[in-house]
Image 1 (cartoon, rainbow, N blue to C red):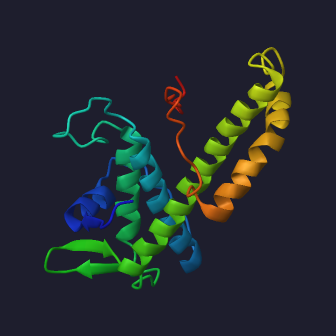
Image 2: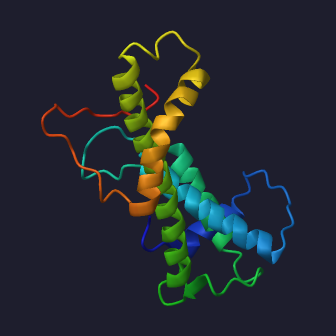
Length: 193
């Protein structure tokens, strides 16, 4: 999660004043604006953690410099932030007039961090419990037991094995999980490739 976000107002004025943009009008309540801003901020965090764009491992280059989705989301966030006074969200956005920047408040960033951490923990727990359940299922039923069956049927069969791990993770976190050093480690890839 981005610890601090500052939006340069001259960039926002450019985005708003750019006549080449085809602008549509949308009306939002203060509550809807607040929610939209929160969702965009969370979306940027998700995109940032997905490391879209630059596949090069070059520490001198920002990871998302080449991601159009990330850049468009940041532009949308800047556009939304500029309207904070109209929607009465001075509790989550403030203007630093000296630096001509908009900043999120610490409580807003802390809430966003809590939501992100919960989402990543839940997804990690889901993946880990499923992988461990699949391992246990194959140990009991054979390594080929899941081949040539419908994916949903396979997931259903694994579920009873996975639930004990999922329950353990939600009760105790990963405190009771240890690596088996007797067997070689396996890397689990979550990419679409």
